[in-house]
Amino acid sequence: MLKRYFKAYAKWGRNARVLVLTEPLWSLPFSWFFFYRPIYMREVGFGEAEIGAFYSIPLISQLFMPLVGGYLADRFGRKGVFMLFDFLGWFTSILIWSLSDDRILIAVAFVFEGLVATIYAIWECLLVEDTEPGYRTSIYGAVQTIYLVGSLLTPLAGAIVARYGVSRGFRILSRITLLSIAIMYVVRQIFLVEPRGLLASGGKVGVPSVAGYPDVVKAVLSEPKLLSLVAVNTMSGFMYPMGWAVPLYLTDERALGLDPGVASTFQTVSAIPSIILLVVLTPRIVERRGLANTIKASFLAGTAGMALLLASSKGNYPLALLASALDSLRYVASFALIKTYLNNSIEDVDPKLRAKFLSFTTTLAAVASLPAPTVSGVVYAVNPRLVPALLALLSLLASLLTR
Figure 1 (tube, rainbow, N blue to C red):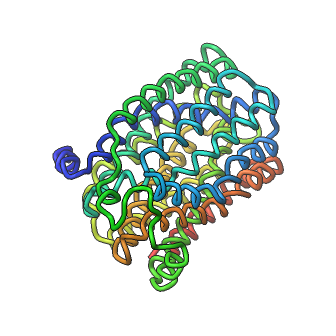
Figure 2 (cartoon, one colour):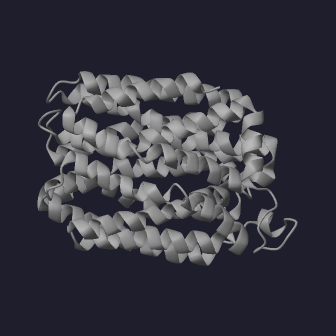
Figure 3 (cartoon, rainbow, N blue to C red):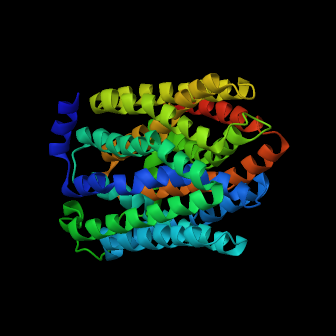
């Protein structure tokens, strides 16, 4: 099993290796940061609907920044644009979180976080451009596995929160995150290179590609399976921002009512089945049909997980743990499998469209995601149990649409 991963690793491009090897410096602290952020916001006085509205702020920039990013990458080179906007977005926003709980400054932090949308598609390109299609699934699987390892270690963050309280503990986690990503930026700046595919293209780096977004739309509409995949990816974009409500649900007295420190164990339990799926199954998936079937099954597992969470009574820790474990497979579909499917599908149609195709699909997902935090916040304020009910229905629909 591990031999299969090492064999795949040997076939990865240079940038894929650099990004994956430095990914723990991002994924481990951010899995803790994201889990405790909504709990922290409620601790310092934000209401559920208000939290949802604040989570919508960075999504506004996702409506146009991915398209801008696709142009900038073709115009100025992918490495430089990637490093600049990744630093401005994440480092600046986390710095604010580590220093203040002022509402205006928190809004500013979310604005900076939105700048990261500029490099979503560039990240995808840097990951896969110098790697053959058959080995790309293992790249996405490795990235997702690393994030899940961070989730496995969330009880460490829970211990910090239990020791220092939610407010101070969260700021400590933010500072740990700052230190970690600072090291990551230094390493990536040194070792990342401009993709060979771009350097060897018809023009020099700095010349925008000929293919435009109308060509992308035409390609999507001409291929029914590609169209259905874009639709599922867009639905995933709507579901993902609703995830902020789950930590609140676990600790809310109107829902499960667990202690914030104990709630961290859900991250650990949910990571285990996902890691097994990614390590055992993902490297074996190459053909389109295998990818499609696995995506369907993962979304069905997410449906079952959210249905169980909805059915869990207050304090029903075991059933809620099972629900969390099942729902974690939905994230495998969203972040590892769909990304591979998108890259390989556009490769079959026209590989020259990849950068703008990924920008296009990212923008569509962003349009769908924009109302999601606010909607889920308002729905949560009415009745917390409506959130898992809505996620269960959406996961089922995504499974049915996958072709």
